[in-house]
Length: 127
Image 1: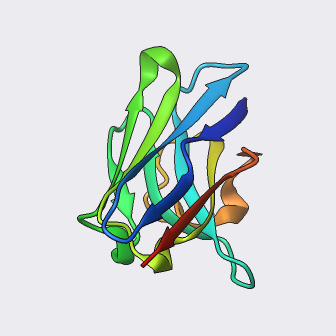
Image 2 (image 1 turned 90 degrees about the horizontal axis):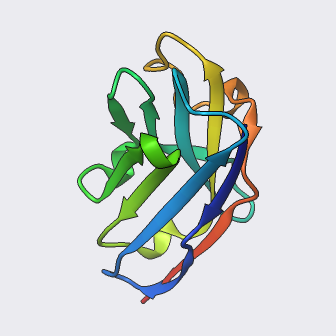
Image 3 (image 1 turned 180 degrees about the horizontal axis):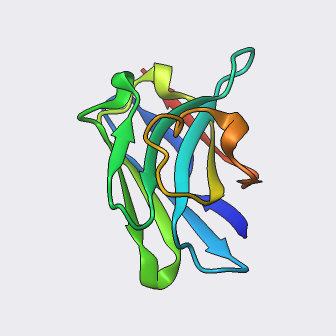
């Protein structure tokens, strides 16, 4: 499966962005899909994840209540709605997909479990 992110940009604190992850090559079915972000000099961290099939979601504590991961299975697209953005949210955002799995609740935020990655989209939040 190939992934392509879009929707990044520069916004002021308090603003919103919606990131899109378009999957191609195969239909998403039973995959774990997560959004990761990476700021310069830091490790890549998972901010939101979902399992295609179980319809559950999980979030990093720092984004709970502000970010929402959702999906349009018919279009093979995963979204990340980001509201009330803060400068600490700045970074390159990547979407990642695992192979088909029964669950990813315990590892959705760990990059080593994901086989497919997009090239990322930059998000910059300023005061």
